[in-house]
Length: 333
Ligand SMILES: Nc1ncnc2c1ncn2[C@@H]1O[C@H](COP(=O)(O)OP(=O)(O)OP(=O)(O)O)[C@@H](O)[C@H]1O
Ligand SMILES: [Mg+2]
Image 1 (cartoon, rainbow, N blue to C red):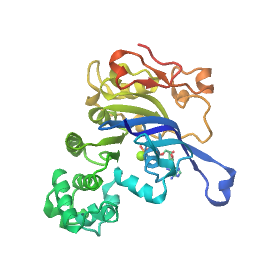
Image 2: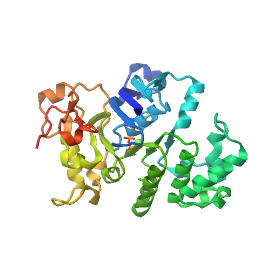
Image 3: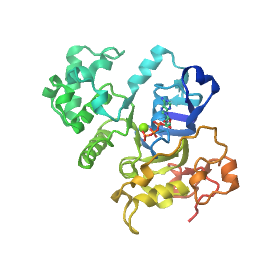
């Protein structure tokens, strides 16, 4: 059963505010994205800056309202139509951990207050005494100590603050934790420690993850499946372990070619070079063809004109988790 299942999700932002808004200039941030995350599964959403990863994640918790599509929680709860009370309960189970702990943790509060601020007003608040014990336990599990509950976020390093954010995300025992670029602001050595902590948490808790990253290295290391996004659309989706070997979409291959070194070197060994981390332009008109066509070496007229349908890679090993791509010119070899 899927914890969350997203179909044909769309979100456009109005480029102009106020009077000019009525002229309707939009940026198409998420443009028909579909994926699902199973129980205990870690799904990675990967792509360059501006491709719509954060917007997608925010649509899932209704920090933004979607324009179109469906979001189903546990196959039956329609997230888009939840009423305020129901939405509050849903957000106790689907937690969002932000990229920048310096900004997302209130510096005036103690760690205990930071951890429990949402919990306290939730339907499952167990009372001060029990909450303090739970907060101490979760803080220890994330590598800090119970005594840290009385300190303030500013007294901690970036990596430690991210541990506090993770502890806050876990405290209410969610079943989906959305981690939006939670390691990208940290030094590489600290990134490894936080990823290991997440692996640890995965093995101990009954928990699914939506792991958002522009770094294929981190995503391949941590995820079960990966969806590759480009300009608001999903290009390809496959098991993380064999996407490198089996990528069909020219864009996935481009991303991988920029991380892989000499033949045989593993994807984990390199990171995406600056060239691919630069700005891509989010469409400001509704695209008719493939979002990647303008940059694709294989694109022809049809690619620019018609959106490619979803296609399946049929082979056995991949059948278990599925391998799909959206491309007219998919690479076969
Ligand atoms: N609140 C907003 N108002 C207007 N445009 C927005 C808003 N949020 C995002 N966008 C635009 O939508 C597009 C997708 O942005 P989004 O933040 O989802 O990308 P991202 O993949 O998370 O990028 P990054 O890797 O830089 O975090 C971008 O063009 C962005 O400028
Ligand atoms: Mg983002």
